[in-house]
Image 1 (cartoon, rainbow, N blue to C red):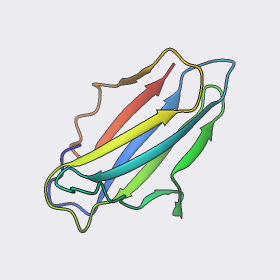
Image 2: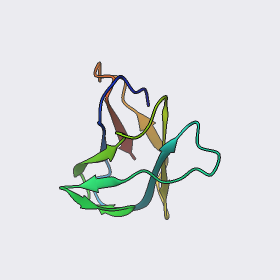
Image 3: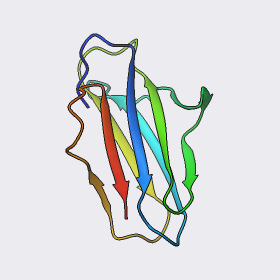
Length: 102
């Protein structure tokens, strides 16, 4: 994810599966961090690093990047099942990205 003098990055994750919930772990860190120290990630102003999306639902995760200079790496790891994760190319906003879980 690119950073352009902002304090927060936003990642929208959509579960496009019509029947199954998706469990996953999320992490974000500065690309320049040798230890991959986690950045704070929030959903509705509550800290989180794991979540479950019900079928055909979506959530927006906020990453606090106020202490980061340079790029941020965002990782999402599904616990089980699915045919993949894709990045939507629709967003033109440099501080937001949309991911689809199949």
